[in-house]
Length: 137
Image: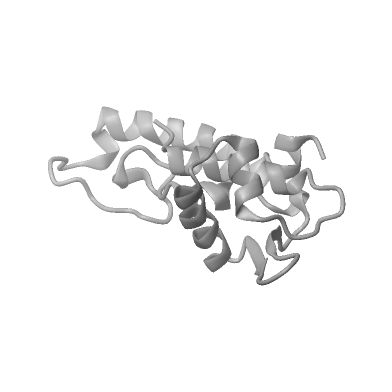
């Protein structure tokens, strides 16, 4: 299930992407508009800033803004930043692979093979979806 952190992160990014003048937006404005707890949103936006998705400006006229064009921000990167591995089990993860303790042969494992298909389908959707696609901008 998608975490609230990721759901709210995508909502905040979509809000920022829809801004016509691309000037910094205060956290409180996003929080109120998207009905997200201010403290929780601060944490999410800080994570996105530390990972190079957002920039921030302090002081009057400050706030958060996108560092890239929305069409250049792929959902694969956002999902990995906020949610972690895209795969449902570690033995099929591209970036966070771990062998399952209870599985003697991954190639013969029905769960492994099914989850490979799920991962590949999910990745296809995330790779082909940008922030611009989500906000139609």
